[in-house]
Structures are given as C-alpha cells and as structure tokens.
Length: 334
Figure 1 (cartoon, rainbow, N blue to C red):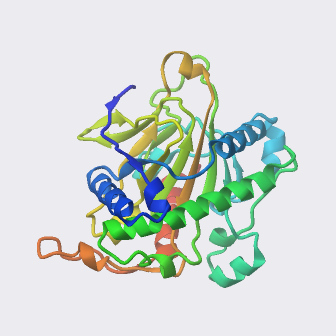
Figure 2 (cartoon, one colour):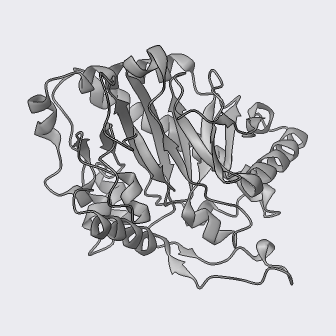
C-alpha cells in the first residue's frame, strides 16, 4: 500500500510568528502555492514545544490502553454528539464518499470541543445545533488527562489564530480579514489511536479510509510512523514525516470559500508494512472551523474573469452539519 513520496512542502513560519513582515510574505507565498497544488503543507517553526506534544500523546495512549469497558464510560449516547470516546468498528470515513462497502477504520478516537466554558457556549450557541455545542465527556482516568488536553487545545487554538493572517496574506487580504469570522469558532481536537495490526486485516481495511476534511483547515501532530497519504496525480503519495512538524491541510469549506483556488484533497492512513505494522500510532488533528453563524461567501480576491464566483453563500455551521448528516445517511454505523 506504499506510495511515492508526495511534493508536500515544508514551510517555516517562525519568522512570521515573530513579526517579521518579510518572512510573513515569504511564508504566505509558500502557503499559497501549497494550497493551490495539494492543499497540504508541513509547518515548522510553529513554537509549540515538542515536550508538550509528546506528553499529550503519551497521556492519550495511556487512555486508549485502558480496558474497553472503562473507555466506553465516556462514549457519546449518539454518534452525532461526537464528544468523548469512539471505538473500533465505529467509523468508516470512506463512507463519506458513498463507499459503503469499506470495512470500519482501524482507529479509536477521543474528541474534545471548547464549550465546557459557559461564557463561550452562551455567546456561540445556536438553537437546534446542540451537537455542535455539547459538553465534553471527560474520563476519570488517567489522572491529569483533562487539564493537559485543555491546555493542548488552547495552545493549538492560539497557533491557528496566529496562522490565519498568513492565510489572509496568501489570498491578498488584510491580515485581520478572518478575525470576525472565527471569534466563536467551533474547532474540534481529536486524538486518534491506531492499534497494532496483528495478523491479516480485512480486505480494503485501512487505519483511516479515504476522505476530505469538512472545515477550514486541520493542524495535525503525528508520530513518525508512516501511513498518511494524499491523492496526487491520480495515485496515492506518502506525506513526508518531518520531525517536529505539523501537517496542515485544507478542508472542503476553505476550498469553497476560496472559489476552488485552494483545494481540499483526499487523504487516508494506510496500514504500514514491516515492523511498523505491529506498532500503534498516535495522531492528533485539530480541526479548525469558523463560527457557526459565519457566512461563507466567495472571497473577493479569488474571483477573476476566468474564474467567476462558483458558490452561493452558506452559513458555516449549517453547511458542516449537513456534511456530517450526509455521512450518517451514507453509513448508519459512522
């Protein structure tokens, strides 16, 4: 299942985050090129301490290695609530593409939102969208999991806010263009655990099936174990593993927002070969999504005579909820 190496570039954002305008311009140009070509790049110089990433992954691994009965205490009563623990045989992301024949993904996950804070929830809440604003389900064990995960969420939230001016600059927009559209963002932090694969897997079974992300963009910390691939030029290509780097990829909403100037690319996680097959793997994506009420209209700088506006305006939260609902309709088990 291996693929050729992809052309996903590495972008150093350290100078931009330090306030160097020249470095910000250079990073924005690199980001624009990556978003036009594949919708993927690897961010380095992001300022997130490697020790924090390692500690967070170790805590998550400790949770996932608990007995299933213990983890299931924080499973959501309804899949659409999407908080807490989701076990094996729960999701098949390939079903989001209408592929109902693909076996469930070989992945467990634990999912965290930001709406435990009553002030944030009251400001952002939209009636009828309870699944977006539901509270988290925190396990009693391991000790210290909640404060560590909440801290990691805050660090990634800050990083995304720091990256938004680079996205704006890449689109020839003022640095603060996205600010009012993300004030009450609905970002989700996921901890994905891929258990070791012993023996033969089911035909066509993957750690994560082929899919695109729904929202604006995703920032992923992953262990240096192969498996992540993108669809490139009609084939599957491996995303490079860059120590200390975050994989950043665009979602469907950003592609729509940018009039398809930027692309949301199919990706998957395959079962690696050799010794890596018997190793478990942690991946921690932070799905950044605008405020529920944000109106997503075609960004003016992406409209040209050759590329007129392709999409009608949509409300961010309603559009993402509809995408999620279509996944549930495609596969009742996911």
